[in-house]
Amino acid sequence: EVQLVESGGGLVKPGGSLRLSCAASGFTFSDSSMNWVRQAPGKGLEWVSSISSSSGYINYADSVQGRFTISRDNAKNSLYLQMNSLRADDTAVYYCAREPVYGWGTSCFDPWGQGTLVTVSS
Amino acid sequence: DIQMTQSPSSLSASVGDRVTITCRASQTISTYLNWYQQKPGKAPNLLIYAASSLQSGVPSRFSGSGSGTDFTLTVSSLQPEDFATYYCQQSYSLPKTFGQGTKVEIK
Image (tube, rainbow over all chains, first blue to last red):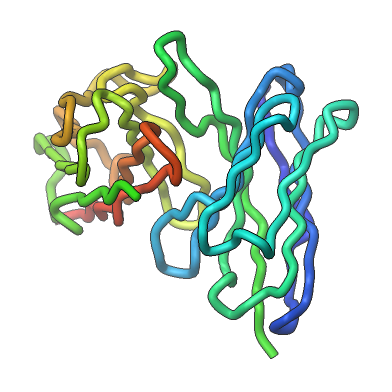
């Protein structure tokens, strides 16, 4: 069974840091691009960051550029998100998601982990 | 950035109804369009990819169509388990943006 399990969320003060992890199983992690997507309470979905299978291509949303760092360890089948200089508007459930790419170049997010809640508050 | 606009933002429907949700992109995205279903407290689930391809395991009452800037998700006969929020998402270019969501409620 393809599975993604996030961990590392919690309560942090503004300006603080947190590292999220995503453990993958049931598929060849080292062949897959991976993403972080977040959802603020009661709001819609926002793509945060992506990383290619070999970490050669990394991208960020403007809202987190310079504060968040995505990384992966293919030997451990794990994805990470280092979040620094956290702000109240970073409060959200953070999901990791695999990004399968199809023959004609289109891609999607499938599957998603169950999410981990990050709350930034004093 | 490509803006994705869904309509309606919410709708009320009965079991057995045919439901259509529309998604419009601010620029052409060919068929680089996906649809997700999200139930309260759960992660989103992929329904349709590449505008019209049904994800494995998704009931055939779900279908997608469109290309360019205008897309639709149709549920041919709404079932009790289909009451949820639906999101479109473009994979044409970064950042990979989502629509604001359409909440389907019981009438």
